[in-house]
Length: 437
Ligand SMILES: *Cc1c(COP(=O)(O)O)cnc(C)c1O
Image (cartoon, rainbow, N blue to C red):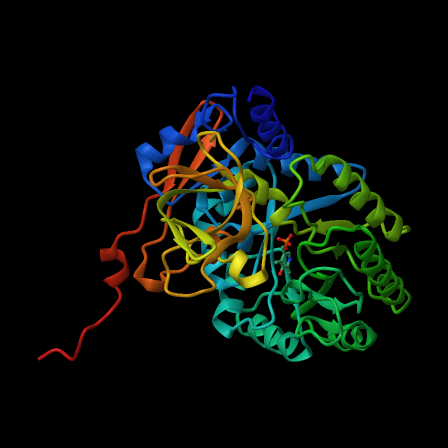
C-alpha cells in the first residue's frame, strides 16, 4: 500500500508542481492542498503554480544567457492578467496575436509594451493602428499585402513600423497536424524563397524598418532538430540580407518547444539545453538579438484543472466517470486527441479499472480520457487533470451555456483568486432578446 502510494507520487512529480506530501494526504500545489482550494473556490477550478511559471522563464533566460536575447511569452497559451504581470516583472516580453491580447498586456504590464511582438496571419487595420500607437517592438508580418497595409498605416500615423517577415522555412515537424505550421502548404508565413525580394522592395519606404527575420514552425514539438533546421535557413536569409545591405537586428525563433504529457519525470532543463544548443549552432555568426516565443513550455505543467466527480455510470461493458468539468473547460482531448494525466486528489485504494472520464456536455467528443486505468472513483471525489496550464483556460468557451471556471494562482504559502468564476448573468449580459417596443 505504502509502496503503491509512493509510485503514484513519483510518477507525477519532478516536472510538475503537484504532489502528495505523504501517502495519506491530498494532492498539493506547492504548499497548498487542492482539497482546500476546491472547498473555497468551487469546481471546475484551474490552479497554477507561480513558482513553476517563473522557474521555467528563468530556465529559458539561463539557457540563452550567452547571447543578447529576449523571451517573449506567447500570450495565447494562457492570457491571465496575473500571469502576464508575473512574467513581465521578471523581464519577459510578449508575443501577441490579436488586439485583445495587446489590451491584456497594456492592462497587466504597460511597462513591457516595448517588449511586444505582434504575430498572426490576419491583422486588421484597427489592430495595426492600436499596436503602432502603443509602440510595440516588432510586427511579424505574414504576407506582402500585410506589409503594404502596415506601411500605409505607419504613414498615416506618422510613425515608423519595425517589421520582421515571418518566413516559412518549409521544415517538417512531428506534431499534431492542427498545430504544425512550418510547411509551405500551411497558411502561415511567407515562402522563404520570396522573402529577400520583399525585404529589398521595402527599403525605399521611409515608414518601414526591416528589423528582423522570424519563424514559428508549430507547437508541441519534442525534438530540437527541426528548430535547428529552421534557424539555419533563417540565418542564411540574414546573411543574404546583409550582403544586400539590409542589416537585420533580430532573429525570432518563434515558440513550439514541447513538453511530455505522459512522463512526469521529463527533464525541462535538459530539454532546454538541447534546444538552446541547436539554435546557437544554427545561428553561428549572428550577433544580433534572439527572440524566443515559448508558450506551452512556460505554463503547461504549472497548471491543473480540478474537477469533481458527479456520477459513475455503467453502460454495458463501459464505465463512465462524469465530472463537473467538460470540453468547454479543457478542449485539448477533443480537439487534438491530447493526453492529460488524471489523478485523484485523495489517493484511492483498490484495483485500477479502465474507465472513460467525460464531461456533461451533449457531445460524444466531450471526454478527457478513454479506457484509462484509474482506481475506483466515487461521486463527490475530486480529480486533477494535470499539465492543463497551457491552451486550457485560454481555449475555454461557454458552450452549453456553461460559465467558465475560476482560476487560482499559488505563490509560495498563499493562494489567490486571479479570475472569479463566471456567472450566467455574465453570459447573458451582452445579449438582446428582441426589438425595444
Ligand atoms: C502559438 C505560437 C507560439 C507559442 O507556441 P507554444 O507551442 O505554446 O510554445 C509562439 N509564436 C507564435 C507565432 C505562435 O503562433
